[in-house]
Amino acid sequence: MLSPEEWEAVRLTLEVAARAVGFGLPLAIVTAWLLARTRFPGRPVLNALVHLPLVLPPVVTGWLLLILFGVRGPIGTLLFDWFGIRLVFTTAGASLACAVMTFPVMVRAIRLSLEGLDPGLEQAARSLGAGRLDRLFTVTLPLASPGILVGAVVAYATCLGEFGAVITFAANIPGETQTLPLAIYAALQVPGGEAKAAQLSLVSFTLAVIGLLLSELLGRRLNRRLGR
Amino acid sequence: MSLSVRLRHRFPDIALDVEFAVPDPGVTVLFGPSGAGKSSIIAAVAGLLRTDAARIEVGGTPLADTGSGLWLPPEKRRVGLVFQDARLFPHMSVETNLRYGLRRAPQGPIRLDTVVDLLGIRALLPRRPRTLSGGERQRVAIGRALLAQPRLLLMDEPLASLDASRKAEIMPYLTQLKTDLRLPVLYVTHAPDEVAQLADWVVLVESGRVVGHGPVSEIAARADLPFAQRDDAGALLLAEIAESDGRRALTRLVAGGASFWVPLLDGPIGTRHRIRIPAREIILATRAPEAISLHNVVPGRVRRIAPEGPRRSVLVEIGLPDGALLSRVTIDAIARLGLGEGAEVLALIKSTSIEVLPG
Image (cartoon, rainbow over all chains, first blue to last red; front, side):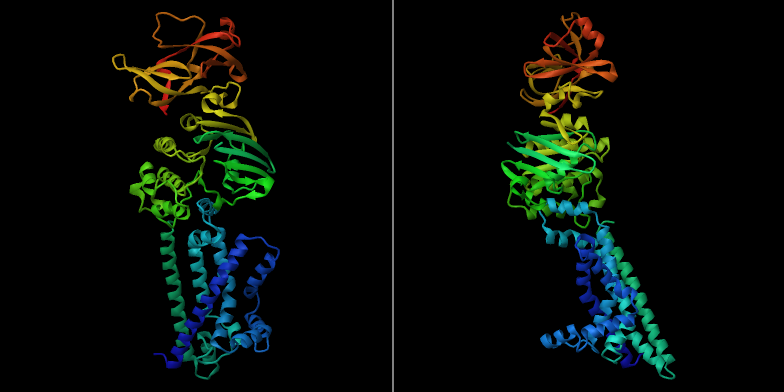
């Protein structure tokens, strides 16, 4: 039903989203923990920074990434000189754009579930001899896992549809950075491409529904494990 | 010195300034109305509340000494904590909960099997906390705290959230625990019956201060202290079976240096019990009555007469050779008998009004 290039777009979309969530999630957990559990002078600034991609036009976010991570950008230069990593116009770059765009969603979900935890359980763990990291991995994170899962799934689903930042930072290169929404956009640019666009949209739609069902199922199972 | 605590802290609404020391391992009860600062004392001893000034020592090991800048974090104190709500980890089975502290503690004398049998929770091991009843949860929480091999066990109103029958279900385990594991326990409550059944030592706390502390039998009989200022005030004595007369169905207990006959008890001579004699059940006399059903005519000396304003009565402290009784009588009765401090008096006690509690 789908042509090989279209399958490639689907595969690429899934890969970009997976990499974005895979790299973004640990960082999001740390950030959410900092925001929920600690008080430090730069906290409001960090909070604003994290939420910036949510309110900025995605194109602007993509352009800022281009400035920072571009070949001549401050971070881009460092990455290239030290590790030989180039992000602009690559699959990794598309993942980075996705990760940045979905970071606020992940942080928010995880932070909410961290703030909803009963601090008494951590006190109990403390009195039983568990130090800070020990508590984090045996009590805090397991109990926050439904929130972490929700954050990850929503972020993944959002990544599947991310457009503005990706096309600005990573461009629209088939097999390299052309994810589903970009492929749909490209199809619509070509006369007579409506059928192709419709097909790809259907795929997009199916992926989104599967994602939602899966998150519902996993969430329910996790909550049962947690005794709720 | 098994436990010594000295704390000072300013809260917005109350100033905490307490000092007490307990000589033996055993159960020390912090007793007082809610808001008196009892839970703050527990939190400070656990290390969860950092007070302005603190000196806390358990069995010779200092846990905190703000004078020298010492403040062990809770996870380094090895102080077991049982809260009003059990706070079991919901994502772990009962057994994993029990092992949580055990795994993190140094090798110690308290073994999983011992605790499981002592608390009667073997059948619960594979279950999840949410499937347990309130009483079962609390037993698991106590076991979990014990298995962390604590130097001291802190219990903050562990029975307050349970109804009377659940409470009665746990109480025997607590008294058992007291005799089986010689562990110092600091126990917060505002329930007098828990004091009567568990306390060896009592610290009375009111508005952030210690208003009295001492062995439970001494505190319970002090007419001038808040513990006796209740409707069901009464003396509490540590007793031992001296003889049992099966034919008359009576047992003689020795307590406070005096003898008390009670309805027949099981157990050999020397078995320990506690007896509680409500103040309203003791009649005072200056001459022994004749032809009366009464078994107990206990001689003593009036130590203190404390008026109880609102009840229009007085509490009379009667000194025994080694302890004291408490009797509530009217002001008129005192006048008629001509009783004053130092006067010799007879306490008349029905054997059936003596409450016998497990030792």
